[in-house]
Image (tube, rainbow, N blue to C red; front, side, top):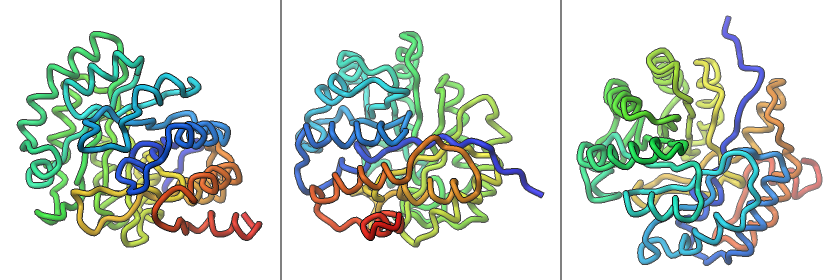
Length: 300
C-alpha cells in the first residue's frame, strides 16, 4: 500500500515558463498583476522571469523591473541560462537562481548551442559562486524522459546528470518531461530512483500535458514520494525547441486533484482561476483547462 504525502508544494512557473514564448507582448504591469494575483491565491514559490538576451526573448526584457517590483513572498526563482544571466540576476536582487541543462545533447545544442557536457562544465563555476554568495540554486533537467530528436532517454543518463548537479551543491532538482511523452510507470520508476539516490536534495517533478497524461504522471510521482511539482496557471507554456510539446500542466487542475485527495497545498483553486481569467485575454491562444472552464461557467 502506497502512502501519499500530507502536503505538497506547488511551484508556479506561469509568469516565466508560461509567458516566455508567448507571441503577444504582455506588458510589465499585466505581468505584475498576474504574479500578485497568484500570490493572493496562496502561491509561495514561483518562477518570476528569466535573465536572457532580449534580442532572443523579448518577452523577458523587463526582468530587472519584475524582480524589483514583485512583492517578496516565499521563494522567487529567476532563470539564468549562463554566467552573464546569473550576474544580472544577482545585481537585480534575486535570491534564488534556476539554471537548466538538457539530458539530450541534441536538444541542448538546439536550445543553447552547447552539448550537455559543455553546458555542465560552464555552469560549474557559476553554481560555485552562487553557493558562496548564499543563494538558493535550482537545477532544471530538461528531456528527462523523451527527446524530440533522440527519442527515449534512459534513467541512468538522468541519474548521472543529477549526480553531477548534486556534486556542485545545488539545492533542488526539477526534473522535466519536456515534451509530455512520459507515462505513469515511467514517472514512478524515474522518481523512485532519484528519490532513493538523492534523499538530501529537494526533488521536483515538471510535466507537460501534450497527451493529457500529466495528472496521471503526477499521481505516479506522488506514489514515488515526490511532494513538489512545477505547474502553470492556465496550462500556459511550451518550448520552442521541443516540436509538438504543449503547455505545462495547469495549476488549477493539479490543485483540484490534490484537494480531492485530501492533500494540503495552501492554494485556492477559485483564486487561481481568477488569475487565469486575468491573463487569458492577453495571450495568443485560448485557455481551456478543466478547472478554468468550470470557473468560467461559475461552477469551479
